[in-house]
Each structure stands twice: as C-alpha cells, then as structure tokens.
Image (cartoon, rainbow over all chains, first blue to last red; front, side, top):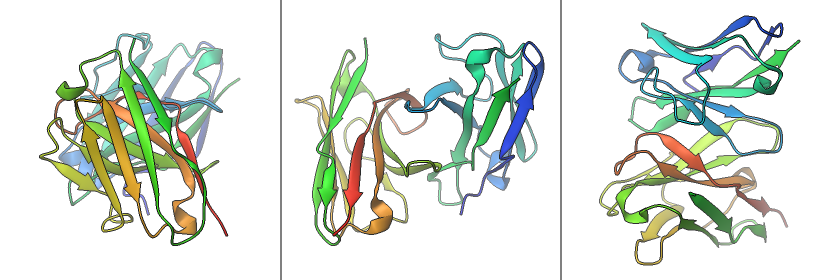
Length: 107
Length: 120
C-alpha cells in the first residue's frame, strides 16, 4: 500500500485555481516530485525539488510543502491540464514511492 | 532530443523469465541514473528499480527484490531489466526513465513503455 495519500479526484473550472495534495510522513524528510499522466500516455515530470519546473512545464504549475503535506497548484487551469497527477517521494527504506494519484477534471 | 525506446515485452507464462531493454539516445547516457517504473493498466505507478550512472548504486522495490535484476551497458547506451519467476501481479506496462542526476533522484524523461503480460 502507498505511504503517500492523495485525493482520488478533484475538479476545477476553466481558468480557476486548483491545489492537489499529497500526504505522508516521508514528506517531512524528502521533497515531493509531481508527475502528470494523460490517458494513453507516459507520465511527464511537472515539478521537483519542491518547486522546480522542467523547461517544458508552464509557470501556472507550482509546488509547495509544509510538514507532511506537499501540494501542486495549477493557477489558471487549462483544458489540457486534465490528467492524472501523481506525487512521488521516498519510503522508510529510502526507496521511491508514488502517491495514489489524483484525477483532475477541468470543467 | 532525448529518446528512450523500450523493447522485449510480451506474453510470458507464470514462473518464466523475460528480459526487457531500453535503448537511449540524445543524451550522454553514462552521466545519468536510470529507472524502471511499472503501471498496471488503469492503476497507479510503482517504482521497480533504479541504477546509478556506474552501476555502483542499485535499488529494488520489495515486491521484485530477489527476482528482478537491473543492469546497464554504457557502451551500448542501454538499460535492462531481467525478470525471473514472473507472477500475475508483475503484469504491467514497464517504463524506462532517465534521471535528472547521476544518482537516483528524479524521474525526468519517460519512455513510452513496453507491456509485459503474465498469463498461462
């Protein structure tokens, strides 16, 4: 079972802001990394080192962290942001572990 | 352009072995750690194994430890996953991933995956 818990689904109106959260004790020690996966596609790196975006990710995506909770915020959500989002960190053994995933719907 | 092309997936009987491969191009392969992550269709992601740039640091998920072996050939720009004693629960899409660092850290670039089907 995953040691990182995410809400199964969230929805956001087009152009509005949505925050996706990830909870786990390991987040007190390790940064969360976030991945986006659209249907039929491989995941894509969105944010790492708490709030570093790769060059291919628009600046409407941002990451933050507090205590045992990491968050990915989409400010001004677009239709193309509709996807599954997974957080990732480490478990007690130091191995990588993924969150349960959040399906984001843009209305 | 970074490219990761997985191959070797397919149908295999429970208990048998299979080796999947990943051909990398577009970057200096021997400068980066690499990983395998799998996903059962319609389900979440599971990290399987990771290897640092010189094969000196290797890790496995508990679910595959002792059955799977990750390796790399830097001269051939290739990553491998040898899977033995395959089980029904190993059936998944297997993604090859380039890290951002030379030691296992962040899954930066993902291949399109190769499907492993375990069934009699």
